[in-house]
Image (cartoon, rainbow, N blue to C red; front, top):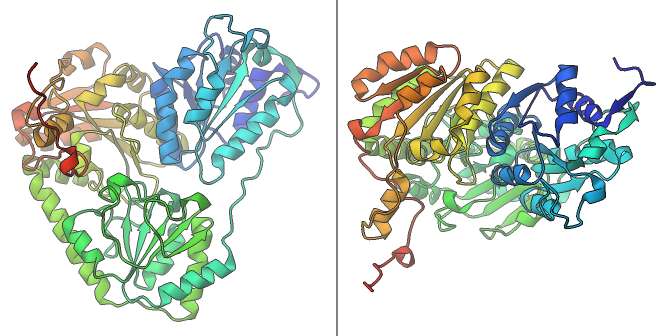
Length: 564
């Protein structure tokens, strides 16, 4: 315990405040412009610091840590180019609504914003961070550091949650201050929905006989209230972010089978849809052309979502949990029960959609089945944007907890492997008992290849399944579908992963025939620590049905350019 009369650096104050926020792990890269903070973390020993090999990977790790633990993620970077390196990771966290605190250094206050070409300064860095964060702050004095950090954490944790950046100039980090008496974070308010709005929405729902809940990431904390509506006979479908709110083997759940033809046809037999905590994004609504049931009712904590993407027939602004609890109260008082035939029809639609997916996998259907069997019910399922994830990973494997799934929501490749590190660290620090299963393609994998060293150094309990076809598979399929089969810039020179893994002491196995899979997979999953299981798609072959990106229309077809 620090003596209140003893002065400490602002860097140590930052570390002490993070401890009070319940932070168990932080991620980043050490630099001359964040050393006072990281020196304090090391000296105090209460927070695990994960040494990423780059700021982009560190941001992905902090993001996945936050999502998989339902807590605050923390990433610490240097200023200038380093703060620029994390920008893409912040965009991803912003898209996913991840509560993440990004602390970055900054040059000395006396030189800041004077266009002196000072080393490590990025011109107007705060504006850049504002563009890729929910909010961005600059600490302007030692005396305001704690209050600024408190405001930043409160902003990050207040719904709609998101990443918040804080610049702390190096001379302020080094300043000596007295330890404040109150290091506790500020309370996070929860927006209560209006009673009249709940009354009106309950009236609409009470008239429906075949209602559906469409659950997005904003409803992940509302599972117990979803269960109450499910008990009344509501059917459930989720976005990829909403997966696991209801266990995905529940008879009332379509899971994330939300755009397949049998499901769209099933939607047309329903007479109400309540969309909760979702933005009805383009890739999950066939570019907003998916025919959803009417009336379409929406609940969101962000009032600006009303009428976006789809015209709605009723809107409640408020916390998803409070809104669903209020609706369940009202419908239970009426003794509401949905048509029992709804769930039987839902199962038929689900089974038809899942059957179509599995048929399209060709030889990889057994890979999916064996991964599900070996992983069981308690695992983290972390995926990069890759052909395999778009084909099956976003809907299978099934998982059973709302924070067990992490994927690159914004569509950027290369984030999966560092996200697997963050999820594995989160499982270790919280004692969740979930081993991490990661899925990546070779094209994205190589973007953050240096983080393999982090995976090994941190002894992450993670199995990474690398689907290696030595090309950008999705892009090649899009070229086939929309560019007349003209292939360019998609064939990749790929490392020999056996040699690469041996050089960093990472256990590795290559599967060239799926006959080898059962024994290799069993051994890889049983191994404690990191393991890279490489699936040689060139040897095994492709999928039966090709995935060629989002749905296209005639305007998306690109004719060949005339010869010059």
